[in-house]
Length: 598
Image (cartoon, rainbow, N blue to C red):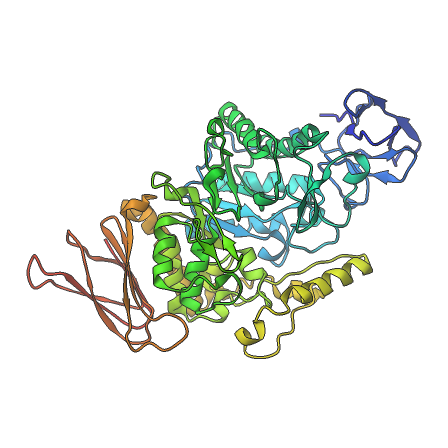
């Protein structure tokens, strides 16, 4: 399929098409509403760029392929050249699925989509349903998290470019895995962003932590909204992507009558119907407000699901004892109970960290599967001063407990690459900016971000934040695939496999019914300061998940209305036969153990 170049550039007086291989300039014709068009048909593999008012070459903001990087010319990519083999693929509903989040550059030593395909069998054996790729949109430099992308239609060339993504999705579908893309629409990175030269892509009417907001409600915003929505529709249609994680949607400031996410939701719904498979939209939102999930007909944004950070904070603070920063309101079992049943801890009450009331209650009729939860993810690991994982501070019993609370919760669980075996490799913040001034600004900004956060108290001394620009910072973050074969790691990996299997085998453990979820708390009277110690009994319908977070053996009564047996355990556990039919079950638990009864 040939490309007929078009460009929305209302700021330009004239626009030329540049073909580096042929040389010269071909004027584009002004059409309407600031659009410029050419009648030249460019075949696959042709390099091209645009020049505004005789200026330097600029890449196409809808470029699919940027083999020379974000400052170089675009290359025509014919999406129809790929020989798809997934004709029988019917898709996966992300609600209630097991999601696995990975970063292409550090998932394997090869750091490409092709090398990632070689590890998909591991995810199948684990029981994963959906593979979520951290942003693959093109960004400057070779290494980075991907959240500074500047070309939302292109695949980062060091990952393999657009053809490699098609091959990855096709391979995943062949193994029964859906693919979710993490996409960033709330800002663009600092290097290679030329949109401000073209037209009103940004607005000063709103602001974000990254600068001026994307223009979603001002003059010209209809074209900006089209640029965003078309990118998502294209990934789903031409790359067969199954779902999207929408980054920080609270920074998509939109005061128009119809929020851009509602527009996107309706358009994606129409495409899903025509394709005959579900396409999920999962919003990352800091608002603690289910407006994200509401029907678009009723003023909501129509998302399939949303991330629920409060569940992570409640689990992490309880198990680790950390109370710095945004963990200040978390850490007690009562807060954990709230998170596991009501989702949002801050549901209109005071958020100490924010210094104001925050959030709104979640209505009882909203299924728990609409919320994605985790005990680790790229943010919660990578935004720590040292990029250290929970496995660097917790024993295996505590890691097993966190896994059980997430995977057997009424929510949709997400795993962060390597957590399933307790990976010891950190996941740090790394960049590869070739511009010296930008590199220095990022380095200094990272140091400034962590000053005064109490990291020295947490880590027990002076903390040296890793230099994002140091290649060693990136190298340290690459997973070590030898670890899963070692006994202690293999034991934890098998536990994760068991928990995922239980979600499917025991209906109560896979249910999203929050009304049949409750938490009994048995604290130790002699517990010392630090991480909470005691026994938690999570009720999931008729099933029970019993966790001993104490360092001593404990016996606990487990209330139940019907006979139960041990279906899985980590660390052991003995269920005593009841003295009579009316007697409660008594479970004897070793230290730092987990037992599942069903």
